[in-house]
Length: 356
Image (cartoon, rainbow, N blue to C red; front, side, top):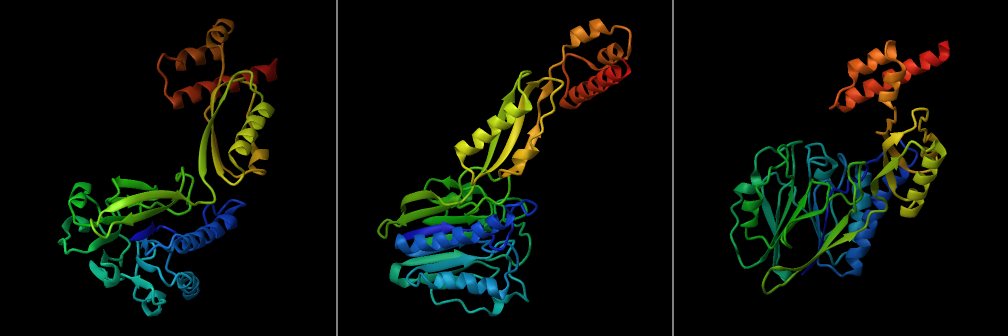
């Protein structure tokens, strides 16, 4: 039995909504999900498991129709899904009256239930969110016994507000595979038996690294997963890079280095840059021009001006500059204290220059 495990699609979300590339990112979510559907057909999988948050918010009828059309293009694939905290089931939801195509099973109940696919001896368990949070550890209290079928669990959660999970209890359950959602970083929880699929496309700057789906295969004889492969599928990645500077680094040199790093790794990705090291006190790094050319979501300047405080104190032993250095400088300083010293000295030196 072959399957694809995905979830946390967040159809309808607009990542980086305040950036020029926001619409492209929103479209990428839809297009990458279409690629998953095509892959299900190409790999001839038996099941497509969706572990919650297919939609970013309550889906409108048009959203349901679009997604249902995609499912209708893979009629031989059993699509089984649950609702997560974002697309939870509400009384007035369009989900309540929507008719899915024949190959789709939506486990909409708030309590755990299962559906059996007799032709392939598979039973899939799951429950959907009807509230924004579920704080009780429901997965630690499951009463499921081995019944000779391939048993699959779909679940959404893993933090204190969304179905807390005890991994040891889950590991001792009879499920052949546990398809988890909610945590957006793809990760295998225990070898070939449980995994978080992660978000299909990264949704904000904290979601670094590759994103995609899990493709797995379960033996009908042993009912154990014989293969589990993570396949990267996202159009873009959020990439964090540190750029080290020295007192000789100019603004133009730094801009050139950042530009080279982006072009080397790919223009389709989204970047966060951290500037580190000691810079010339007279230099102020300004990379606004790069933010208009590339997908740069964040630039954090942690560089420090390279003042020679010993020489400064020797040159100004009895004026305000010397007093300021003596008052603030000490052997062990926090970042806040360092900044206060640097900013103060910079202001005092500029004031001295203006008066001289």
